[in-house]
Image (cartoon, rainbow, N blue to C red):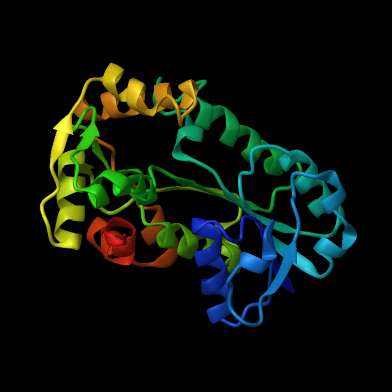
Length: 283
């Protein structure tokens, strides 16, 4: 039977598709731009926008018994309803650690509200689910790529706050294990990287990975808001500032989900930097 991957050309979906294809699993990968998918030979690539009801045809789910659910901005209810009606029997959901609501900052945040709705779209319709809740992605550090390439200082608030950034490939490996193993049904897995690092240490890891010093300047929350307001919605800015503020006194805890699912520790931040070196050095 075939595994359907939504969000197949995103950071997690692309790695997941490669991982499953390397194991010889039949994969149907959905992309809005199939001509740019760049996925392995043998993967069936389907061009579709799954937020549109017209894309949810019976052919999409033909022969599919397992599905990776990417948390698209809207339309997940219709997508999951169509998948269940089309015969999909197992779901692995990409959610967020914020969905657990462990901290006051999470309740009502943009990430909490959105990802809880995605989880409930699945759990309300079937018991055959596994939920992955990654914390902060190492890929978020790509927001520093422009000043690093330009040779200007990184401007960041709360530089003594500490997070445990996770490599997107570890999330993909966890998803592959959940899709292929029966023992993960009905379970929720918090996922983080293997080490909680201050933002100072995160910059140092990038510096070591590209072989040159990177200046870091601490700025106030108001300065950060002014810097990013043209590009980031206010609710996301508020969520980020609350998160960084809280993790000064209480650093992110390392969670065991990657090891529980894959049997090995997650990749270090230094490994992530090596995998993305070109993003910080290419002209």
